[in-house]
Image (cartoon, rainbow, N blue to C red; front, side, top):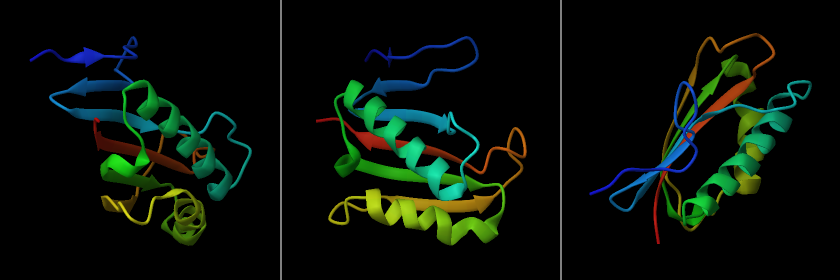
Length: 116
């Protein structure tokens, strides 16, 4: 089976497809001036675009890993999650507090989805 690297970069691949599964790398917001809810919404827009590029969508999510700079922002992140997620196709999920690349980064999200 072939690994299809759809957005291969210098340090990592942003999205790849293998054996009917799409792997999306950890994503952060482009506009870091917003709060956790705003940054999370930006990340979901990126996820939607990358999943579409790979032939999938959020209704086929298998798992989500979410890192928050401050776990006190859990409810803010969940506000965006609840508005975005397909409630009929919930993935497994983990959310943890972690040091991110810089204080301006409030959230990072990585997902895996099925293709087709």
